[in-house]
Length: 248
Image (cartoon, rainbow, N blue to C red):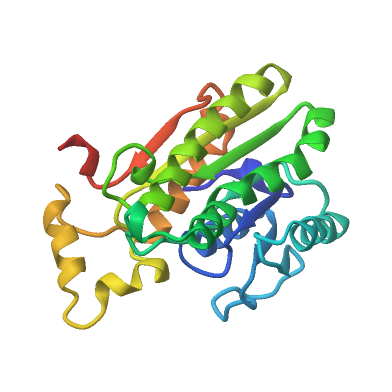
């Protein structure tokens, strides 16, 4: 897919060091965009340094560090017109009685609150420019139970609600916000499913109508479309990319 409109635009991606966030970063760079990439991990070998990339090491759970990372990226590459709120982590499928308050707060801070912080940091400039696009990472766990534990499922449901409200509040001022809801994506976050004899990964594939896991690049391709002018009339939606998991 080629989207010439991205040439020269600045994109902000959180969770950019691996998995879907890395694939999104690579996809936008390949389209000629400038990317502010944020992750708590150091810049991965698979992400080559260029003048179009501003890589910032920051924990999205640390508001001060996260805002500072965004401002440093903006100072070099300009205000982002598109934000991919992708950073997230799983909760080991813990039910509520097996989830401590600390674990609960950690999942919500990473998966949900980070999106709130990023959004509120960049939204004022977008409103001034009367244009801005948010692609927030939800999950099939934001639509049904079973895709995570109590904390992860709660966070992903909340992301969907937050995204819908964000779009409703600011759509008339040039802002678009949508969610992506991935199913089984082969990323480091799901490495435990592939451990040993990969029994869990095989079971997930067998339970998915498409009978396979997806690659992060497939989610990145969907992101390119949702963030583009071709999707300008798509507002406040949740787009599953799940191999048919939700159709069952």
